[in-house]
Image (cartoon, rainbow, N blue to C red; front, side, top):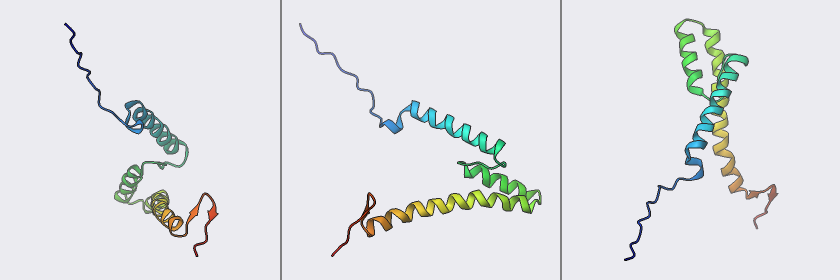
Length: 105
């Protein structure tokens, strides 16, 4: 007698959801965070939460100049977030694709 084997399907994940990709991103973020904190002025390049915590600690210790220093990377991060949301809308509105400006009649 022939019996069919049941195929057990593993859940499908997108490439960006794979564990090995996640582990690589965690490792790279850790290296960049350590590098910028230790060698580039005690700020975090990609972890604004860390900068906010350090700014709060400086404010709590009464180090106002140091607290203002942490506003630079936080402001740059926020400005970049706003620009990255505004630029695609401008490009779509003016039909700027691949460096070519299409004139609408």
